[in-house]
Amino acid sequence: MTRQVTLAMVGFGNVGRAFARLLLRKQPELLKQFGWQVIVTGIVTGRHGAAINPGGINLNHALELSERGQSLNVLSAQPVPQNTLDFLYASSAEVMIETSPVNHLTGQPAIDHIKAALQKGMHAITANKGPVVHAYKELTEMATSRGKRFLFEAAVMDGAPIFSLFRGPLPAVNLQGFRGILNSTTNFILGEMEQGRTFEEAVRQAQAIGIAETDPSADIDGWDAAIKVAALVTVLMGIPLKPQEVERQGIRELTREQVAEARAAGERWKLVCTARRQGDLLLEARVRPERVSADSALYAISGTSSYVEFQLDVLPGLGIVESDPGPETTAYGLLADLINALRNQ
View 1: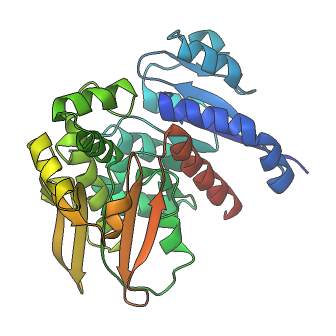
View 2: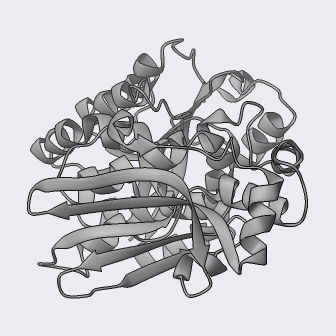
View 3: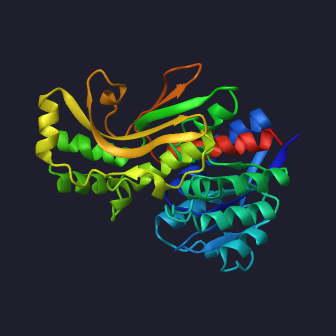
């Protein structure tokens, strides 16, 4: 028997559109494996309008309009509330997929989006790191009290199964710390500098291929890495931590000469994320550039790839590599959360 699953999408940028394309591609498998016919009943964007259609929005048409920079309003079967929270109440969806831009300092407005979805009786799935570090306990308790899920696999290392790994396959472990490369943009920039580019030239190249924003400061000043450290510490170590509390140094001051000097010595500069604890006490949480030698697992992480190694009481070095991710891998993290929310209810 086929079950119809309805989604509301908050955000339709690179990740939101990648999720829509993945949903279209995976629909036959979702139907075959789970008996689900997934439709999107609402999409709201920051700059390109919104649409609500209880019978399902034509995603191919929505993608065409969005990629041409045109408004989605023409796809709406009814008037769309201007306020995102009112939109969620009007969209009649079972699940919200949230991909709004991250706010490192407060987590808003994504926190309010998730609260509204949970109050409406939706599962809330996000790729946004802000709500994880600024409201994890509140949102998790809110979801549990309503029999819903608040999931965020795509928030750190895109689609790599980090949070779900600790929720399921690793019962009764004690996470003592981790070390890794969690920001792919800075890793790419440092690689370009190894090829002889200046810092400014490497940043422009990262912008040219679409992995760095027009204002790249969140990446190069270490804020993106810091909020990911905060998310992992908060969720996996059970110690609430804000990105402002992470010791943070970016790569802005590194020069081409320093990078060349490290290479001549058989080493590479990496923006390294580290956290350690003893019992309930957090001993260290930092992001900083470090020279790593060839015998380090971090040495081989190139391009836009990411890596994290967890130190567990039963597994002293469990590493996960994600090679050259993009919006499509983040989209898979969202889809995996969607499947897990629906099949575990």
